[in-house]
Length: 535
Image (cartoon, rainbow, N blue to C red):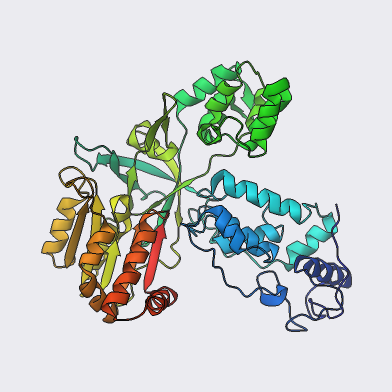
């Protein structure tokens, strides 16, 4: 379907732009329609190229929804009335984690420009984000451009900023070698957290502290076998030059159950079952169990169906890479990279569910085995260039990962600035990650202060934000001396609580109003002195 708007009286694409007359006419109409300009409306800066993302669509550029702890419906309310590209941004998980290959703003802009057709790349946002993006794409018409229009758009599109060298993006991973795993918790812990080491020496890949490692893991073969048995298909059925079993293990996501699977099921059932499947395909929850349905559970909910294996695979989502904060410094351990990974396991309706990559690392990959990886460069999460700058790091649980790398880097570079780490977990006796490493860093003078919080050691639960409040005057004094403030960990709860605690500390110790304290913290963020790596 061709989507065009009459070109505005004042062209958005100047005559000097490197396009022929037909391309300029189409681009003027396309951007006028995308930016909702009526014919005759003069753009903000006549004679200049105005692209989506600029203020020509009347947007003020503010993003009050850019808070990963804010629920999706609240984000969409804040974006109501904004241009389509901004509402698409509000639909993202707001973590700017890079798993999609973009940040939230650039991913939404790429979709709005029809430069990115994939609506399921926001891993933290999951099905909710994908559904919202689908509805917004339908709102803009969901049209398919003819070849001439597509060629004009390709010519007008700025080059992608991603580094496409091997191992620098999800589209071009390299092969590395799994070296080892070591459990960080002691046996009495309720959790299983592993220190993972991966050998990069043959990959040619390097990294910097603060970066993340993208990992292409494999799904649990036992789960794939149960799914194959449920649909009654032969495991060696050929699908995309592989067997059905290989595709399910290596290439497809087996949780959660996608909308397209329920749509397929609706074609294979009738009566109430068809009605229920259709409702699930539209995001409904007829039995109150939609959030618990992975692919196997969805098939068990509609027993007796036998879809064509190829159609079944086409209804599933591709398996996405997982990103993990790097917990080492290349200066301390050249040619290798380490990760700190919680093994995710939980039970629903009597069946054990497992995180794909976390349990892959916990036991399904053996030392010496190969895996595909890439480095996701950090954006706004790095050590200060001046080693004399004080740093405050808040990283409970696996959030300690990048700060271990930071401290190794400061040791290797003989940095002189003080460093303060807030770490916490459940129990000091069994959940004190990297205790020996931290002792050594303290002895070396690299880690100046260590504040610990244990939530299950006493009658009262103590978290890192509680320790921060206890140390409020000293934290504020460090900030006044120019310290950088870093947070890594859970975006939904911990990071928000830490932000609130820091704002309260500034208000109390700076003897200022809540609004002024909030402005102080916002200034820390805008100046790059408050940096987060949240998930």
